[in-house]
Length: 474
Image 1: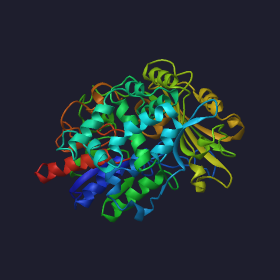
Image 2 (image 1 turned 180 degrees about the vertical axis):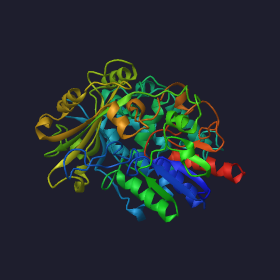
Image 3 (image 1 turned 60 degrees about the horizontal axis):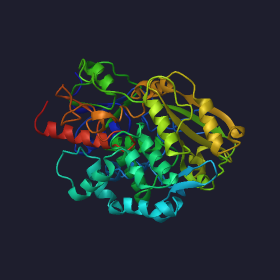
Image 4 (image 1 turned 45 degrees about the horizontal axis):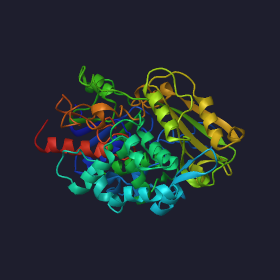
């Protein structure tokens, strides 16, 4: 009979790896099982187009990773993880060749927004500057799990961020600032009228000033590989190429932790309709490019940025996000999040060549082709872009779900950011990581604090598992 382990983890995405590391650091015996042949989940790097061109199939830029309390407490640099900071974290160009920027310095950012809004931006960020460690520790733990480090700071942040981003942008008089902030909120793939999207924009803006929006040298796979190497050094086992269909296929353990969608967890653990109310959100449509040269932006600022948002106005961005949240057709003019890593890490493409990454939002499960609309939008801001394309790898919702089973219907956030799910994920309750099965836990980005390569869902779930096992649960 196989030896009883303390914990078995299913799924080797950043959250599953983090949960496994956290529990192994506490002296527990941990075994991790992953369906794919390599670890990574949303933090992978692959040759999707041509030999020598290293692409990130999902997440590419990591403000929440470099600023994560979980990652910062681990010696991941010893295992090869190196953060590369672009000259500018983000550029938001406009069709006339100008741009708003999110720079490391508040002053440079404010100046790019124009004289009328520079002071308003400074006032918005001022209460939180220099307080990243305190704020993010409170923001990324379960809100009711103990007292916050600084209740007044968290309350002030809540007052500013709880309204929709469409309310937040009313304090700005110019379209430049409105478009910049709306684009930041667009990362949660929700309409701009959704409550708490203002908080998302604030967190991303603050992250740029406090910790940057870095890339992982060599690609996002470096994050997953560093976590995996650390886990092995702690005595943890990693088994890849093992698809788990039922709980009884796994070795006996005191606890099971799933870095999967709630739907998959319910199916594997035999929990029936336990998560029947969980809603999946809009999907992504992603294109990875191998290019013969850098993207020919008309905006000089965009040529210095690791991330470039493409949406001419806050209204245009808002319409695209609203259309994607509906069932039916995709936005005719998509809002694009794009990344150009080889400007700052040339090792990821042959000499003189580049990789470029872009995605827009479409309805969940949409089966159309957005490629033409994506490239038309890029050409608005970078005329001649198509002439540089050597190859492209297109991934609509179905392909994204095939690559990563957690992306149900192409939802890369593993759950809609709407209704009660803005705070209670994966369902209403005080214990987001526990399930109806006393030995089974959920640690994916379907749980608080939601998407991103930061490991905090895994970190928080590991705490819940540790408390249960320490109390004698079995």
